[in-house]
Image 1 (cartoon, rainbow, N blue to C red):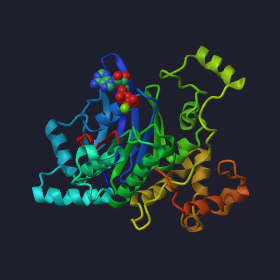
Image 2: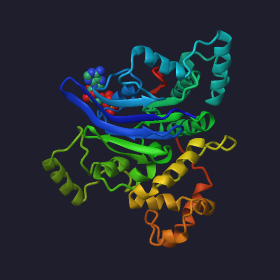
Image 3: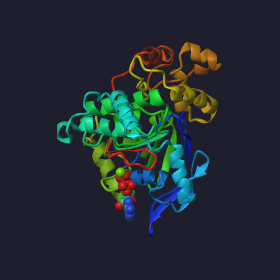
Image 4: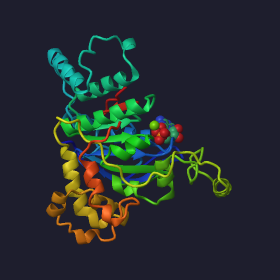
Amino acid sequence: MGAEVVIEGLSKSFGKHTIWRDVTLTLPPGEISVMLGPSGTGKSVFLKSMIGLLKPDRGKCVINGVDIVRCSERKLYEIRKLFGVLKKSETEIRRIVLEKLDMTGLSGAEKKLPGEISGGMRKRAGLARALVLDPEIILVDEPDSGLDPVRTTYISQLFIDVNAQIDATFLIVTHNINLARTVPDNLGMLYRKELVMFGPREVLLTSEEPAVKQFLNGRMDGPIGMSEEKDSATLAAERAMFEAGHHAGGVEDVVGVPPQMQPTPGLPERQGARRRKDRVMRILHTLPEAARESIIASLSPEERRHYGVHSAGLVGAQHGVLPAGDVATIPEASRTQPIEFGTDDVTRGHTPYE
Ligand SMILES: Nc1ncnc2c1ncn2[C@@H]1O[C@H](COP(=O)(O)OP(=O)(O)O)[C@@H](O)[C@H]1O
Ligand SMILES: [Mg+2]
C-alpha cells in the first residue's frame, strides 16, 4: 500500500510574496487525488515542497512518520530509501525497465530513438522510468500539457491502471476538467493563496462555491479572471455582459458526479478505491448534503446493505437533476461499465519525471 501523506498548516512564500498559506490535507494511502487551481496559484511549488525540493516556511508534511519540512538531510535521504530508491544491478535495472515498459504499454519501444517517439509515448516512458523505483507516492504535474484530449484520456487510464497494480498514492496537478471529474478519489483546489477545499471528489463536484463551479465549467463568468482574480468592478461589468447574453465560454453547465474511470478489464480491483469507500462511508455524516446524496446514489444494493443505508435514507435524495425515483437505477446502470476516459512532470520521491 502507498504511503500516507499528512500535511498540516503548510505555508510557503518567496520573500514577501506569499504563495499559499495554512494548507492542511491528508493524501490517503493508495488513493488518487487531484489538485486543481488557476495558473500561478502555486501548484508546482506545492509538489516541490512535498518532496523537499523547496522548504515551506511553516507547517508539516509527514510521510511515513517523518516530517520532511524539519528533518535533517540525512533523514530526508533515509525517507527516500524507504521509498525504494536503492542501487540496483544493471541486469536488474534492465529487467525492471522492461517490466515497467510493459506495464505502461510500451513494450517493443525500448529500441526506439528519442526522435521516434510521440508525445504520448514520451509521457509513458517518463512514467515507466518513475515506476522503476517502485514508488509508494507518485506526483504528477500537468499530465495533459501538450496532449490532445484522447491521449490525455489514455494517460488517465494509465494512472488508474498503474494505481490498480501497485496501489501507490497519487497526487496529480492538472487543469484538465475531464481528468478531474473522472479520475480521482479526492479533489482539491488552490485559489487565492489558500486551499479552498479538499475532500472526496463528490464534495467539489457538487460544490456551489463560485470559484470551484467556475473552474470545473471552464467559464469566464465567475470570480476567476485573466490574471488570478477579478476586482469587484470587473466582476460586475462582466456579470452584466453575460446576463445580457454574451457567451461565457465553456460547453454548458456541467453538474453532478460522473462515474469514476475503472481499471482496464483483466486488471485487479483498485484497493485504494475499496478503502476509500469504507473511509467515505465513515465520514459521510460530516459531508455537505449534495455530496452525501451523490455518494449514497452511487452505492450498489449490496453496498447499501453492507453499509446499512436503507432506502428510507434516500427519500428526497437527488442525483444531479434526476427525480428521486431514478436515484437507485441510474448510477447502478452506469457504474458497471467503465467509461472511456484520460505528464509534464511525474515526480517520485525527489526525482523529477521529465
Ligand atoms: N523558485 C522560485 N522563486 C521565486 N518565486 C517562485 C519560485 N518558484 C515559483 N515561484 C512563484 O510562485 C508562484 C506559483 O508558481 P507555480 O507553483 O509554478 O504555479 P502553478 O504551478 O500553480 O501554475 C508564481 O508566482 C511563481 O512565479
Ligand atoms: Mg505548475
